[in-house]
Amino acid sequence: AQSVTQLDSHVSVSEGTPVLLRCNYSSSYSPSLFWYVQHPNKGLQLLLKYTSAATLVKGINGFEAEFKKSETSFHLTKPSAHMSDAAEYFCVVSPTSSNTGKLIFGQGTTLQVKP
Amino acid sequence: NAGVTQTPKFRVLKTGQSMTLLCAQDMNHEYMYWYRQDPGMGLRLIHYSVGEGTTAKGEVPDGYNVSRLKKQNFLLGLESAAPSQTSVYFCATSDTNTGELFFGEGSRLTVL
Image 1 (cartoon, helix red, strand yellow):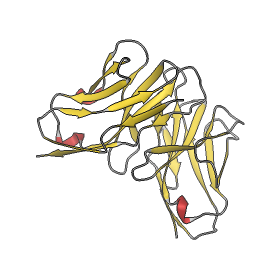
Image 2 (tube, rainbow over the protein chains, first blue to last red):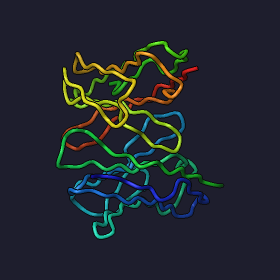
Image 3 (tube, rainbow over the protein chains, first blue to last red):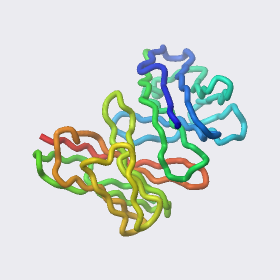
Image 4 (spheres, chains in turn red, orange):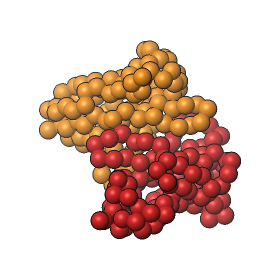
């Protein structure tokens, strides 16, 4: 069975400091992994995705994530936070062995960026 | 190119009333989904469709029905609304080559 756990429900950083949002997954198959961002009162937007190519994935707005199979992790990072990064972030796992579309969402991490 | 469009964006219902949420896409995607988002619970899959004329249950299907009569539309129905169905509902489509989801902007439903 597949599952995803976001280890922090809320992360607060100062503008200009690094961001780390943690995600662990469980999958019986080689998964596809995604990070999505949701700004207030908006739909979700794809930040980046891992689909069994390079383990270090670069996304939009300076975010990147590293797939670590040994640790079953897919943590999201950014070297320097910007005020516009304040949003909710979701880690998502998609089992590549199936096309049923039963994507599994983490519970979300709210990122607060302080001036 | 509108992408994924949901209507209505806001609705208030009384317990027992019925309503339908419409999702329309112009991306020619086969797969469509309805999720609900509740605080602290992430997104949970209600129903989904892998093509015109097909539907399947997701994680939390009770109290909802769906139909996919046309490829571009995916309807979510509440037959008898309950306060527990107060939520924000998101429609999404997916690119079957990449698995990427494309979301609408959400429909906020309040059941009194």
